[in-house]
Image (tube, rainbow over all chains, first blue to last red; front, top):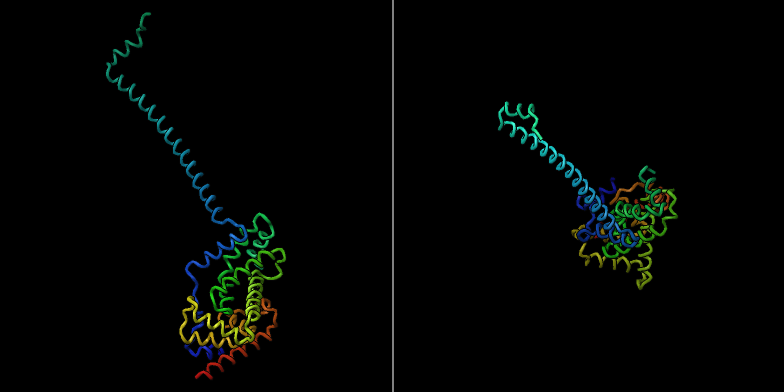
Length: 105
Length: 182
């Protein structure tokens, strides 16, 4: 350590005075990938594309199921509502008459 | 060897996972190895070529790696050999003396767009270039990267005692260079 201080003379930084081109290391790694026949970007693209497709199909199925259930519930509710509405339009005695007196064929 | 290295070794030994494992190895060590080379040859373009050669040598020799040492040690060794071979070839390609090689390295450094040091840093690089190659390696590894002598021993194949002596002489020479410059 003493030696280092002598050389540094409190002036010379131990940092290297060199730089590299922008994105050099990313590009270098891709270049080596290419040389060894590793299609990293393709693999990643296909992988992420597959994830998206699976997610989309999943969402479609879950959404479809939810829409179908809601629709079914609405239909049932609508028919219940219709029945109540019809019943509310006729008097109770008329309804009783309807059930008691069977229509003649 | 830690768990990650064992896993990596396993993946490198299997053809299906070999490419992906090597790709991650490159991403892990490329920066360290690049700076190790750059400190020796100074120019970015030369460092880039040597680093590529080193990784391709490692790729082609992957079957020979048995896990006796760490990946970093193995890769450092390959990168060091590639660097020394590059410098030896440069000497053979028309530079008759060591000084001429070093002078050409310095010329390249001055004109390198990727050198952003001040005058003092340039003088330090000049001083380092006066050292013999092996001593330069030891000095750079110790001074800039603070690599332990034990690690250096496994990379360079030189005993700890010899490495300590080498670093000591390198420091003395650089100090003398600066004193004489005054």
